[in-house]
Image (spheres, rainbow, N blue to C red):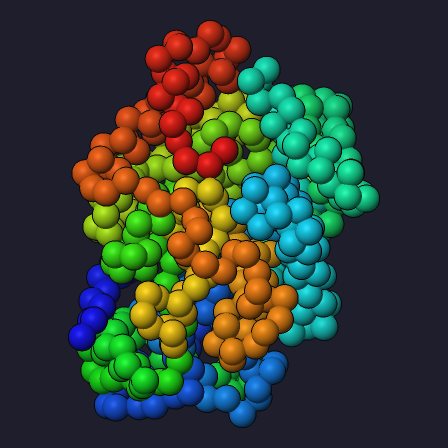
Length: 469
């Protein structure tokens, strides 16, 4: 009989926790699962995907017994340590169209815009205090090579009658960001920033209030399939008729999922509070900002005047070997510090008070995949949010809930459902060695392009071997 063994997450502790988690403060931890328990639906993972799925299930069947098993505390993984950027899928409408077709791509993009409205409503009603600021999302260029990276998305949205983006010039970008590093781009109007750990904690509280059972500090070590699935934990077991796997990078332990996903380290820093300096340079809003490098920069000003600044793609995991080093980048965030000084020379002397990293799950086409495990019609999964999930995981919750409940609707029929039709990656060690080589080439290319220097043709060729765009 098939038996799945999961690698126990290596938990970030103390100063390795993200600024967001430390800023949100400690919440009472629900008791770990002990003894033998049962549920109608078991969810592995208490981040955004797991929590939204639980909430969607309860919306449709309030009497359903839903239990979440979380290895740490809810939101301790990628959900509580990301860049806090809130924007829709309209920026990826070209990628979506390649996978799901134009009609569904538009539908999914609109669904993420609806999710932003839902977040706004949750905050306005006082249900979740998440520091949501919908001051816009800026996608910018700071070198010739980055110019027009947004053109496909802009043209497609306009052709579909969606007025989502506005063009930006250098003066408008400087006015909104306080920086002259970027000089052209676009902005999504209904987008912005959030305190991601507060959002996760708020979703947890909302789920508990609706009767979802949550056991934190309860890693799932093994899954025993069957008509009734058994989830093994250190102090007990949970039996459920249906299971949802929503554990982000840690699902790389399952070989059929690993074929379609890879794990990279994200790295982020946060400065000391410098509100007066930021006011002086004109950066006063809550916009989220990205540039168009292959290893994209993303940053925001927090309400209290810190700068949170991240850069995509740190180290690569070999298979599912995600060790403690992923919680403390070996490069000591040198890239982030260097780029922060380039984008904001005024902040070169600002103290970096927080420096954190962690694993995230990525897919070859940069879009999530939903399905059930092969031969296991009652074990579902959602993987591959690629670091973009705040407005996307509410949609994932709809898809997974419909799959769990056996619905025949727009969500269960989504073309994001079905792992067999999606791109696969090479086996190890080819995957790992190739990824390291491509990563190095991308870094060299970025460094040249940011200074408008000529890129070595060999470096350019290797850098373009990366999956996705």
